[in-house]
Image 1 (spheres, helix red, strand yellow):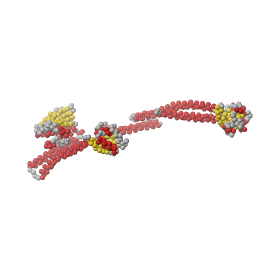
Image 2 (cartoon, rainbow, N blue to C red; image 1 turned 60 degrees about the vertical axis):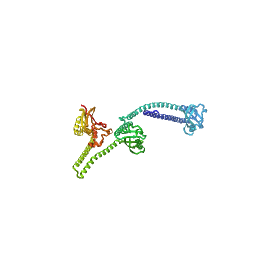
Image 3 (cartoon, rainbow, N blue to C red; image 1 turned 180 degrees about the vertical axis):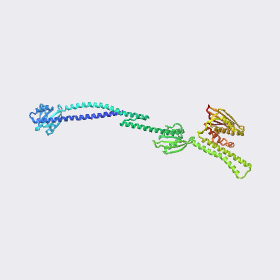
Image 4 (cartoon, helix red, strand yellow; image 1 turned 30 degrees about the vertical axis):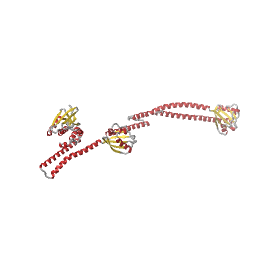
Length: 572
């Protein structure tokens, strides 16, 4: 359908109103003008009829001639009737015998009764208006006038009114066009403002006009300001919610009633894999166990919690139905794999610590109780004291290692020292420190570290790392005549330090766990040589705290090499 604008509607309504008013005026004038003219004619004819009746009463002789003279005087047809209705005089009829009798004519009958008779009839000359009054001796005088003059007057008035109607319509169209233009201007401005608001531009200048359009314009500007404020709040709330969801470690999944994923944060995509929004639940959650738990929560309509083994991972699920917006659900997923691994590590750590402490504590307690129960000979007492002392030192080394490891793990990253560390000087210092211990084992320690092998880190920590690695190489290398070699070089932005021994080597299955706490390739041999099982764990923590890495290469019967990479000091 054709849609009219407000301006066209206003112009059309204005034109329709003017047209209706003019038509009503024309109809009313057309209806009342003829009646008014007939009334005026009746009044004139009545006055003339009374005058003519008075003449007829005074001059009764020759009524036919009197009728003619009266007709000329009053400019009307004059007819004089006897009491019986016979025509005795008529200004327009020569042969009175041919004139119709007045009997039965309403105006004659009314006049004979003493009233003023009026009637309208169509005669040979056209429509006539008759007015009859009584005269002396029962005579009746009737005046008749043609209505053609009135009809001509009405037709002329209609022509004038039609012309006035056309002028009124033209003026109405012009004035309506101007009025609609003036009225539509503020409306057009408000329409443009509304379109700008729809496009996101809320800078609306309100009108200062005091009329209704001005009030509407100011209301629209106020609405735009409120809408801008509300949208700002909603945008801020959305951004805050997005930031919260993006920063959550737990995965959040929102599914509508049709089973389509409407929202998924990065954690959920990381847990389930790939982009999830817009996909069905069946394709987004590939694991049937996870999907079954989510669907169960949707079917039950109640909050549901479960923990599911999904492959090598453990995932905790919290499913809550959404009552609003047609249903659906929100599922919170948390990857419990690392927590479980930490719990296992903690359990193993407690078990290992308990196991490592049990042997020296039991030995110290047993030999001390033996000495307390009674006197023993001097050689036995000395042997027992040496055993107690050895286990006490082992216990002290174990506690010291645990404290060192705990201190390294608790050290905040910002407290890490980053200084210039010359590996050649530290390697020489470590060789001097361990010279006596190496001599006891019959081992030789060689240093081959380049002068440009300068790292960026903590000198104390680097020395502790090298000392632990060399000490291990001396302890577990070849029993007699072994050789330990320290080499160092710069490799781009990194510095590589390697400690190599020529001992029996380590089987491949032990290499992945070599840096775990208390892990030993040969527990009996390690305890005999004073190892606590914490040295390599301390090495790994210290190297990683300086931004480096540590690795091991070995094979049974071919020796072992520990390689430490540290950030290099920038060249000047």
